[in-house]
Each structure stands twice: as C-alpha cells, then as structure tokens.
Image (cartoon, rainbow, N blue to C red; front, top):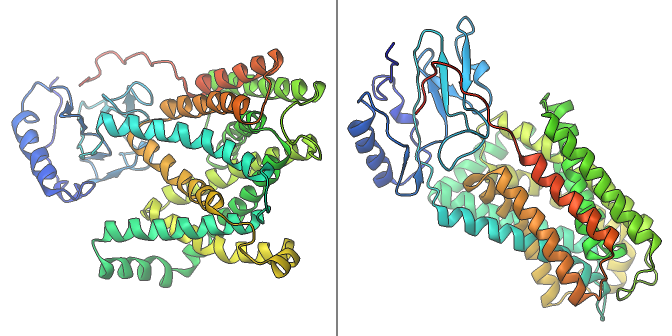
Amino acid sequence: MQKKVPDLEENGITEGITYSMDQEKVKKFHDYYEQHFNQNDHPDFEMDNKVFINRWYTEFFNEQLEMNRPEEVLDPNEHYQIINSQKDSAPGSDNIPWSVYSENNNLTFAFFILDSTSTLKYVSLITLTLQNAILGLSMRYSRIRDGDMFISSTAVLMSEVVKLITCIALVYLEAGGVVGLLDILNKQIVRQPLDTLKVCIPSLVYLIQNNLLYVSASHLDAATYQVTYQLKILTTALFSVFILKRSLLKTQWLSLLTLIIGVVLVQMAQGHEHSTSKNAEGQNRFIGFMAALTACALSGFAGVYFEKILKGSDVTVWMRNVQLSLCSIPLGLISCYTYDGGQIAEKGFFFGYDKFVHYLIILQAGGGLIVAVVVKYADNILKGFATSLAIVFACIGSIYIFDFQLSGQFVFGAAFVICSIFLYGYQPKKTETPGAFKV
C-alpha cells in the first residue's frame, strides 16, 4: 500500500521550521521539498553537506514529536514501530529516529535544516580531542610548576565568570540584539525564579566537582588522571538508569566492566611502582584517586540531572548555562572564602595569577561549549573516539613534559579503558522490519 507523505503546509508544519534563522536556507529547503517530496520516489536526504534531519512530526495531533520519546505524542491506540532508530539512522546523523511506521501505513515526517557541514563536524571533534588532552596536562603543570601557587578555588570561580560572559554573548547572538537579549533574560530568569533555582542543584555539584579535579590533578600524574576520570562514563550510565529510567545494551554493560578493569590495572601499576615523574614528593595518590572518583560520581549525577532539565523544557542550552553560572558564581564565592578565606585575605584573590593561569581558566570554561558543538554536529560515537584519543595524547605528552614512564601494566590498563569507550558507544544495527518504508 502506498505510504502517505503529508504536505508540510497542509499540516501547519511550516511555521515550525525555525531551527535555521537563515531564510535563504529555509527557502532552499522549501524548493527542495516541492521538487522531490511530493513524488513517489524519495531521494537521499543529504545535499550540499546539509543534513535535513532534526525533529519529527505526526499528522495525528500536529504536535512536535520529540526525539527518543515517540510514545508521548503518537496516537496511543495505534501500534508504532521506530524503524532504523538509534545508530542505524539518516546520512550523517546518529541517535535520531529515521522513520516512524504505523500499521495503517501512514508515514508522517518533516525535516529541518541542520546547518552541519562535514568540515565543521570534524573540526569540532579535533578541537574536543585537543582540549581534553591539553586541559589534563595544563592542570597538572599548573600545580607543579615553579613560582607562586594560585588558589585553585578562585580559578574555578573565574572559569564560571568566563562561561557566563560567553553564554550571554551567545544568547545575544541568538536574540539578534540587546533588546532581544534583555527580553529573554527577563522571561527566563526574572519572571521564572523557581525555574532558575532548580538549576542551582547541578551548579553546586559542578562547582564541587571542578574543585575536586584540581585536588586530583595535584596528586596524580596527567596520564593517570585522564584515565581515572573516564569512570564518569560508569556513573553517567548508572544515573541514567536510575533517574532517566533508561535501559542499556549488553555491550554497554560489558563496556562498563571493561572500564573498571582498566582503571584498576592503571591504579595497581602506579601503586606498585615508584614514580619517576617530576615533583612526585609530597603527593598522595590515594587522595588524588578518591578526589577523581568523587568528581566522576558528581559529574554523572549533574550531567543526567541537567539533561532531564533540558529535555523537560524548551529553554536553550546557552540560556541554561547562563542560569547555571548565575547560581555557580555566588556558590563559588562562598566556597572561596569558606575554604581559602585566610589565604585570600593574606595574599589576595588573584595571587599567583599570570598568563598561564588566565589561559587555563579560559580553556576550562570553553570545554563545555566545545562538547555542545560536538553533540550538535557529530555524534556520541565520534565523541568517544575524541576522548579516547585525548587519553593517548595526554600519555604521550606526559612522557616529554613530566618525565612520566609508561609501564606495561599501565599501557594494558589504558588500552582497556580506551576499548571500553569504543564498546560503550557501539550499538549493533537493528534488523529492518519487513514491509517497512525505507528512505
């Protein structure tokens, strides 16, 4: 039976095409739709490196069908199947359902323009890889170099300030000017104080996490720090199961076991051998490991909680980050003067600051923004590749910068960790449903 492809205008969907503010691209999409989509044949939906996929709609209620949540919008009396969902999806796009198929053979879909070129995708992945590796090495170097030691809590606070300024600038660009920016800030923050307050939970957790990362970097070499911090994948998975009620594939649970084995091997290798890296004296590896482990747990909880907040509203990621920073900055000030008030009073807030510390603050603040770009233009599998390569680069960098010596057991454990990241992102392709419509 012929599948029905509804006209966008007849179903009132054209007003929803607001993902791209570039009217030329929107017009180009309309022209492309009129030329191809009303025909019986359906061409490949990739043209000029633009992937025309973002969200799906249903003609039954003419409502937005959120990705990964089809059951909340479609007719509950109709039986649906998501065809080629998750990793077997559209060209250049993962984790997005490719088609929704119903028993009455009505297939409804609409496409947005996702301005994602191949160049931007790979540039963002390379940037994330370098940022992860450089941040680990830089944090380590900042704590062991000669000269006055800056107060780490003040650096964490300043990174939040940089993030706030950056995200406000991004909201300004999205709003199209000062008037639009002020209107958005008024609607999202002033008029909805409770909505902002609920974001304070992850902001507090993130603040504690960032301080723990400095403690960990002070007691662990850069390579061990990088590998140990990958336990955040385990904590994120566990909190996703308990908070978001998600289910994991067997291969994903296997990857978590592989991850634990790898980290244990790394810790055993470092515990049984005397470190020959620079400035190893005065370091407590147990404190460093526990700080990293706690930071992983906090990272998993905060990330899942923040994801739940994001998916429960239409507030943009940048606006949520503004709310996060507005909560984090006061909490950061309290943290600074609670734990380091004596040092700040004696030495000053910006004691030990130099160009390298300024660079470190900007690097840490930009990390979250880079991840957002990667998630938007690439996918989680490629992100796993990027973070894995960052571990390798950090290990190589540690050899030349910190005289770090890689033992065979450490290499074996690191290989387990890297393999676990690949395994966690891998999902086997699903078998096509007989008779399903495939584009």
